Length: 273
Image: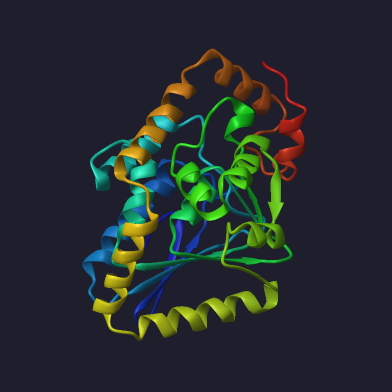
């Protein structure tokens, strides 16, 4: 399977999907298009039981959405879920029969964080993984499932800390808060995830699908809640306040590789543009 922004390799019943969307793995229409194609391909192939997502970029897993192309990437999501919403696309991934594992190195913020939260399991490199929900600092609220997942995983107070502060969280603290399954030394992460994926892929597909379905009944928010968060994000994108904050951030290096190495610091100093 050849895609423009995802390198796909097959290891038995495991697909390895390495995100490669230079210069910083922004979630734009090309990456959303390729995610849709990958999901469709995997779900149509009865042999595939597990997808492992990783990044070709050691500094960025998925940085966040491309805020200059919101309408375009939403249209790509609609090709799978029938609605212009990456929140509903990510929820589809959560409910798929495919088991999904995120192997995280580098920065994963905003919708990047929401993408890994939609995956069934998350394992992160202790030395390099950084997590954040930046939306409130720009005048948005998370629109792709971050609120739904984080409140359930962390509890109300910690979720509000994460969602309202716009700060970065290193892997050890993310593990303690429940954002990820485990923080693992970088030199052990790949083999740990590979071994786990192969083990799961060797089990009967009916059992895997049933367990996922029952867990989702208990823990996954209804479609309507994801839809509402998506709508609120879209509405915020049209407000003068959010547009002004985004312009101010852009003037300071937002959506550039170097400018986002310390994004939390920049957002804390931001004034309306």
